[in-house]
Amino acid sequence: MASMSPPDVDRVAAARAAVAARRARAEVKRAVATGERSPLDVVRSAWEGNSDVPEATLRVRELLGSIVGLGPVRVASVMTQLGIADSKRVGGLGRRQRLRLEEWLRDREAVARGGSRLVVLAGPTAVGKGTVSSYIRENYPEVHLSVSATTRAPRPGEVHGVNYYFVSDEEFDELEASGKMLETATVHNAYRYGTPRAPIEEALAEGRSVLLEIDIQGARSVKEAMPEAVLVFLLPPTWEELVRRLTGRGTEDAAEQARRLETAKVELAAQDEFDHRVVNHTVSEAAQEVVDLMSVSRRRTTAR
Image 1 (cartoon, helix red, strand yellow):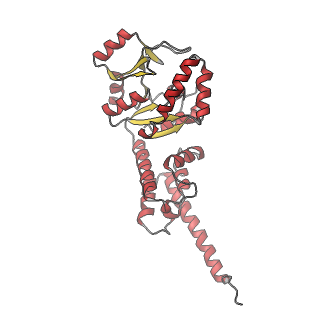
Image 2 (cartoon, one colour):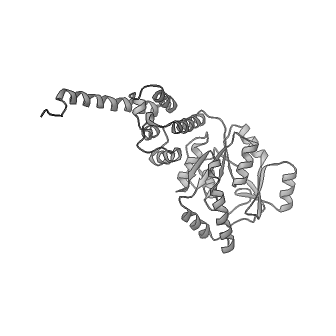
């Protein structure tokens, strides 16, 4: 019976072809890492050419990992966000996956070109919005962090004019009636929150990026008033972790905790309304992901 093994000459040719293909993919990654080629150019070349070009045979994970500033953890998060399996190659993506990847790359490229950007950070109660925004305030001074007004009392450690403007119901009424608020909302059926308009408009006019840390109702209102705003939804790693964070901070009694957890279930259902989702595994990583969506320097000051 004749042997089914390929002749030596075929094996040698196949090995040489494999080496050439790896070198071609490595060259694509090098060009992306050095800025000689944009990731958008790579994916478009992959989708316009035949399936054997190096751009098409490159894994999506490898392409994203070639982008300066994206480490393995961030790449894995983006892949999950885009609904792309780890083994997928650029040329093997389906139509919807291609659209999502192209949109994500286009958005990131627009940020890299510079210019001010308004980013709204929202999410369910106790997810850590305030902690993440405080970290950004301390480590990314280029970001203008909007300070909201609220009728609730300060929590331990909160400072008037830094964390919030703590105002009375009468003062809040006056600010709202005078048109000085970009948005207002009543949260947990108890307290009112609002975003002063003037500081945001001034910062954007100066070319600074602005971060709003507000509730979901407020995020919707800002998007209506300023459609160019980018909405970011902050998620807990798990529901159990959200419960632990809420009960662990000790700022609400049992009845209030139960009410807020019911509200959180409704809030989590709104995540698909947002442009981006960030999972708050650790404060520093979540803060970096948010800052990546803003056209600001990545150089950080020393954390205080």
